[in-house]
Image (cartoon, rainbow, N blue to C red; front, side, top):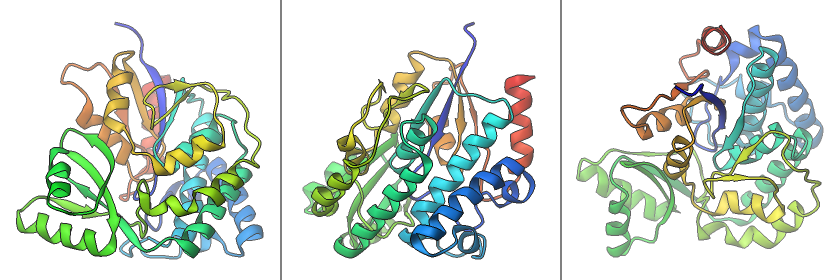
Length: 317
């Protein structure tokens, strides 16, 4: 059997929560050092501490303030990436989904961490100033249900398909509330993501000129580590400013991307996100006879230090 290669996965909005990464922040010096570097930069640019806010809130509180969640996700995921490297765990491939794509780009040295933080802070500024409130809803059902809903007159966008019975829709607040009530009345499991805007939909089209113009000012280098596009489902060797607009506007193709990877596999899928969401989605996409393995590290239930040690043992012996 061919030896497994390693892909690091970076998740996007919806995977965040208060206290994410706290155990590693308290106990792993590299995680804390990288986190504090990002935190200091955000303090200087935006006037608040990510650490104070993300570790000051209770796990049970909804973490959906874009001003906090965007930079916090970037910092936590990038800090975990650097922590893995410090432990000798290195990726053969980087793969991000939605906001996670720009974290993967930082990991691949396409763009510096500080420039990534500037980009997400600018995105937050434009979105919160100009985009109407909306949201995103995860639905545990065949994506064919999306077609049924749109035929019924609901103005929705298919934001992503994660596996054969899990998809995400985006829309305005009123439409999502109506759809959520309808699905629950039909006993179809759904969950509102902690996101106050309809990313991956026409609702954000108004920010495109200003945001793409800003993105065009960022220096981009070719990836130093192979980079897998979550919107194209294949490896790419260069990105431009338009690409990073597309990762927040175009649908996420998680299931298609796993299928493409499995044709090249087997893989060790290492989840660099805070909640293990990507790892869960991968598990549901793998065939019963797949030789790949899936490795979450951070979850809302902590144990990140223990899981990191277990991963090191599995991959490095």
